[in-house]
Image 1 (cartoon, one colour):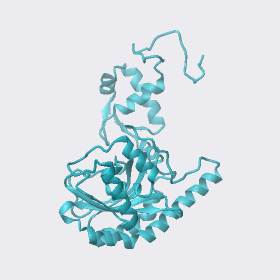
Image 2 (cartoon, helix red, strand yellow; image 1 turned 135 degrees about the vertical axis):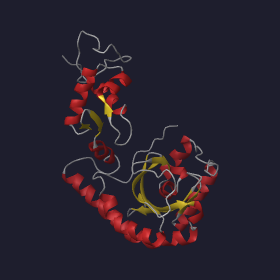
Image 3 (cartoon, helix red, strand yellow; image 1 turned 90 degrees about the vertical axis):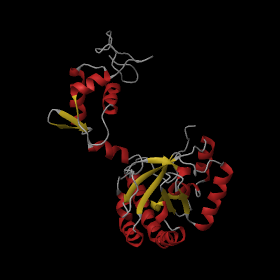
Image 4 (cartoon, helix red, strand yellow; image 1 turned 30 degrees about the vertical axis):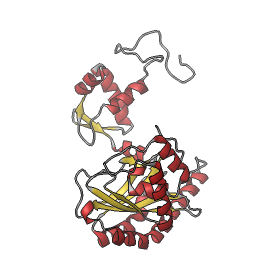
Length: 293
């Protein structure tokens, strides 16, 4: 028997002696908890360890892992398990209908920027009040703790984010209303100062972040806009603060913005057509933005 949400209803309690406030704890709930209990990266974990972490029986965890393995969400390595690559594919679809297509289209331009600057080249898109790193080429002098693709960080504290916010006033309002939390001593936390800087970015086409996201990092960025001036994505050059030359590296980005913009527009137009043909949800550069305060 099932309720209206499709949850199984039984007259018995949870086999593992656990409950959720106000609702039965379903197999889906447990499967998501299993995924959340995995260590990051490709580190492996055993059934017994997961069972201890979650307070479930080993037989329950084994059944859940078998189902997750069939779906490609986890991978078995001998008697142990690790997160599956399908999780990355699913997660990437949050930011692109066809994961990796935008990065692939911009890869030649990013390679030329790297050759001209020897700095890291980054590709980012906005997601709510953050920027998501979709792609990067590491520079010759990478800073410690290089951020992996998929990392999210506050838009107001990065050049990528400010380049996008300058052309998205609604998102900029949401960011300000959510509160400008500092990442370093140099992060902009004044709404007036941020709005003044965004106005300057609209005039010049280039955004800067000098030790604002990380104390050892500086960044120069430019937005890639659609035909009506909405931001599709942003490209940046970043590296150790003492190696970033604002005027020189801004000039490199300005020379690349036209071919990069045309390439990005083609990708988004192709993705929109594909979604229309399949009668799927329309993909637009205007994303819902309600920041958690």
